[in-house]
Length: 176
Image 1 (cartoon, helix red, strand yellow):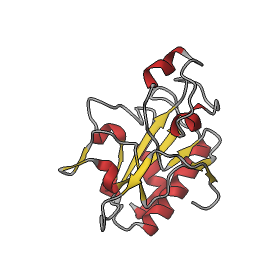
Image 2 (image 1 turned 120 degrees about the horizontal axis):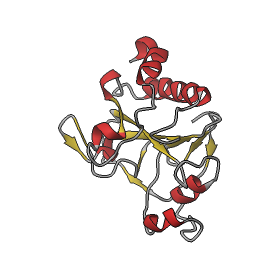
Image 3 (image 1 turned 60 degrees about the vertical axis):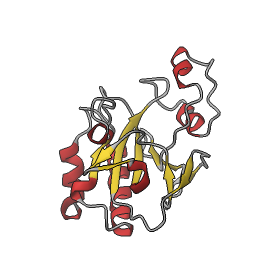
Image 4 (image 1 turned 45 degrees about the horizontal axis):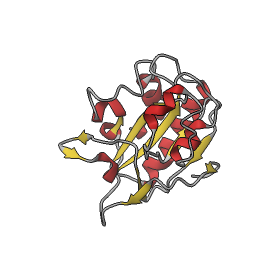
């Protein structure tokens, strides 16, 4: 993505041939939980997280995950996985009767928590990224921009109640 910092995560795989990208999944993440700007998300996505650096990290041992994009609190975007590759962000998931959402989705992580508002800079970057993705992948439409909680209910809660869906959708206007 234009202007994004590029960090290559090994946690991706090929998408099935001829499968259109039709879903955009919004997540939140912070490592340790509730702490921002630590660099630990990069480390997690690149399999170099020091699990002894924080007690919470013990539960992440051997976890192999990634996202296509991370939007930090200051709005900076990092791309970890090329969009034509399958990032490992959704896990066990279901959308519109289809399982394994990683196969046909793009995952965007916002640095944050379920209980803290996201920043204006994050919304601006998310809106810009969404516009570009929708232009390039016309299969992503209004009904196919969802939270992780929407595709993995009961298992996931992000992006959480502090994510302002109305603000996000209004900013995108007629695009969605």
